[in-house]
Amino acid sequence: METAKAPITDLSQLDPEGKYTYADYLLWRFKERVELIRGRLFKMTPAPNREHQRVAGILTGLFYSFFRRQPCQFYPAPFDVRLPKKGQPEVYTVVQPDLCVVCDQDKLDEKGCVGAPDLVVEILSPGNTHKEMREKYEVYEESGVKEYWLVNPWDKIVLVYVLNESGIFIGLQPLTEEQTLESRQFPGLKIPLGEVFETIIK
Picture 1 (cartoon, rainbow, N blue to C red):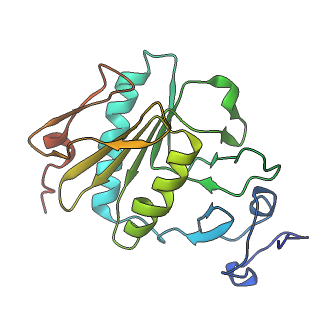
Picture 2: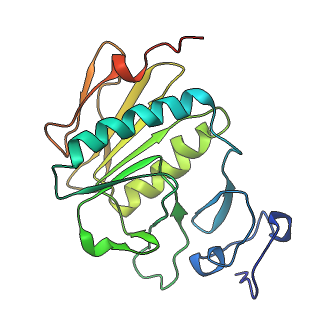
């Protein structure tokens, strides 16, 4: 295992094939945003595209309106979520979901969240599809995220996964822009997808 001994100021100083921990992550001082998934380094896209940001902004507004009256708290990116693995003293996964909701206040500290959020929303962008659809899906399921939304702006669909009693994600029927997404974990949280996916006026 590679361990950073001093602050790292340039991404090129890291071995892209190395294995890192949250302790290493805290020493990184470069401007690029990165995530750790099972110790592997994943560079985030330099800047999300306009459609990604527009969808993120609409969802943030809808989440604010709903959760301001709820005991659970929602957090938009950038917000570090550490996902410890049982039996491992070190944390090897640190992700920044586009949106997440946390109900257990004991999971929150000044640096973010330790443990699985109750709801995670990821918005796909060109270039990050593989990471969200495979790598993050697996760590969210493994860590116990109760509900996971995968938002695809260009196809205008949302895939919803809910965790069953065996700790396995079950995929629900894909939702399109003509439908309203209602959370299984938070009844009453209704997202009109026509509003989320409305066409940008150029």
